[in-house]
Length: 476
Ligand code: GLC
Image (cartoon, rainbow, N blue to C red; front, top):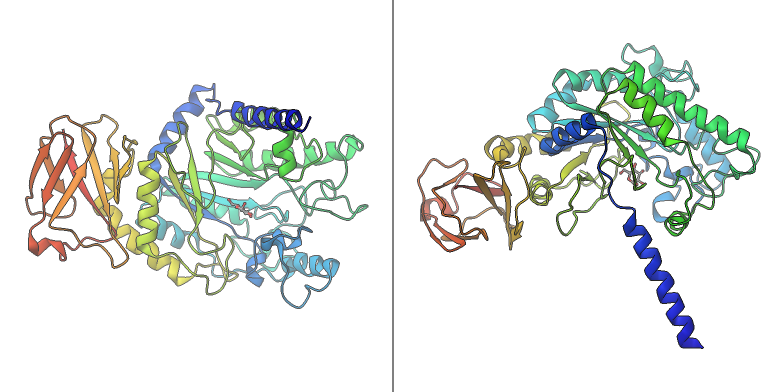
């Protein structure tokens, strides 16, 4: 009897896994979307920004008003003892938000110099505060309640998009589907219980319809009034149709309710206004998740569809004073690893309440820029190639397969080249030429089957002038 039960449970678990696997990546049918996705994949390196009045307190974006007891939802500070008092004070941050040093051109310059090619900006995070001039609520940066509304650059999202677009960045609008300020999502009649809608949409369809309209209207504003948008990056994967086969997944995200906001209708409107728009209905596998978004991690192996790792440059998505920024070497090596597995890196910097970044972020970008100027040819528009990596060497190749790049990563003490670098390319094709990017000196090398041994002269070993990761370019 017990065995039978175990068997049934195992079978059930197997079916769930299968069902989840079944929700595989769906290649978008629209050729314009496919084309833009291809272009986006070539960009490799983007800038993410999480910004809102929460930066005034230097706390986590939105999550401290979510009544869940998780590590990242903990409330701190003078109002934290009482939930309702806290939310009031949090929402009141709107009345002091005045980032007068906001100068998106400065960000563009630094990001461009670092080799970033696209930007994704939080138009609205889960807390519902709009960093754009929506007509649907006055919980927004352009409301008279917000001191910054009198500033010429108060329509922040528009300013960010215009500034980056001028320098040919692809433009991405982050938009949270859940909205913890909207009375149509967290109905004030009930207390919120968790991140989800706090009433059953099936029981109160009219209220849910109001939420759908609210969402649709905001997205319509973004898709019509903010110039050319390339990516609509929608967060809050628990807002989704609750289907039988993904009920387990939805349950894991704490959702008991069907939170269908009619994505087909949204997509139709969005793409009518923004032909070829890449839609990222994050963590909702299907037609509207045109690329997947592993968060704060590098997938262990290449993924056979478009993907992007989003990661914080510090520890937090939001601005935290004195946050601990990753080293330039770490960031460069993350980029190399991600690109070698066929992905993009979307690196986040959280602007502070004054409207600028931590000086550390600028330093990192300047370092990365120096590296990318030498090594970018092995990064941009490159493709993954087996074996992807061998020890601390990571591979990429040009689209035509003629050039391969072997990136040797520096260690804890920085980059020192050994006397012989042994590159196991896994490729027995005869190499015609080998150079070390950023180094003029000709190097001796010898290929035996699929291994190329490169001799590094003593003078170069600790004195190559190279940093973080050295790229050997192999021409076939
Ligand atoms: C995490 C955070 C969320 C943030 C997102 C960005 O899910 O909880 O606040 O927007 O990462 O990828």
